[in-house]
Length: 360
Ligand SMILES: NC(=O)c1ccc[n+]([C@@H]2O[C@H](COP(=O)([O-])OP(=O)(O)OC[C@H]3O[C@@H](n4cnc5c(N)ncnc54)[C@H](O)[C@@H]3O)[C@@H](O)[C@H]2O)c1
Image (cartoon, rainbow, N blue to C red; front, side):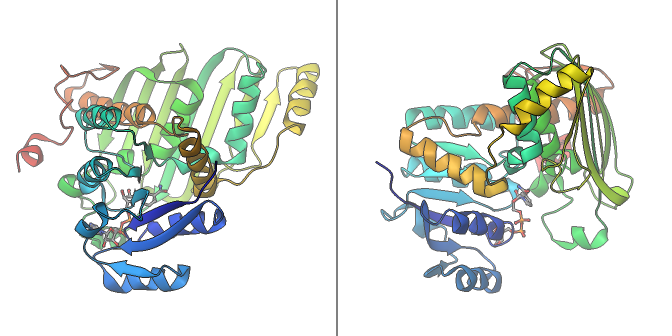
């Protein structure tokens, strides 16, 4: 039987987009309380979205029995602790990217979740763009053929004002640079389409802003499915674009260039022959339009909770995305290609922070 899930939202930044997602799904979710440290922003959101209660004290949320889900929209450095407390208090968790600060934390959380009867869903809302979903449909229908090559560009602009927010730009609180914080969505799309990576080589640099973490990176990747990929990320592109290009034996899929909505229509699907193009176009004409972004991810989350099934984005998905990041930092620092998966014996398993920051 379906019922509404009651969500406590922690945070008042990107949390606004979450609240829009819940508002679109108002038959599925209620938000009885919002918690943030910045009272002005928090109270504003409560007013805007009709949330009856505002608090600054996160401790009061865990013991409440009128909350089913805790939605963590805070900076990355406290995602693990807030998620752990919530699961152990018997709540489901939705948590923003980047999920945690190490593969060890992801594995520890898998155990915590397995011991409970609760679910944790990392956020990767970009997956639900219609263009990308159409590519998934063509793969399911067997219309793409063998995968060869993927190129992904995340070329955005971030100036000094962006880094005035105290937690940004620092290893200890942002946990990484543009690779972790910005390109993670596009790189999740790589894993979403092709599965996990097998090995990568990376160069990284801090060229654009005076920050601790990287803002520019170039990666060469082998996927476990045998295809190859090149990924480039910079926060120094005065013209902002995201571009994904997937080459398969039977077609090429190309995203739009809109930097923050690159998963959306209209993607181009170009087949190798007119006959195959006809089959591709026919399959695409059967695609059923759905909501995208947070709205769709939350709708699927509700479905999963009602069915006691895996959430639409899993801890393994977050692990794949953070393995790519861990391997890239390792490769950049050692000058060596880095194989994956990253297991407990890897030197960066417990933390990818540079030594000085890890020890601080
Ligand atoms: N999925 C996306 O597209 C996307 C986009 C932007 C940000 N994010 C992620 O969302 C997270 C938050 O980013 P942001 O831009 O909203 O940051 P922000 O600094 O604008 O907001 C963070 C909020 O968390 C609150 N907060 C922090 N610690 C708290 C605590 N202990 N108790 C209660 N409230 C607390 C702060 O008061 C603030 O309201 C980050 O992990 C970021 O990477 C994701």
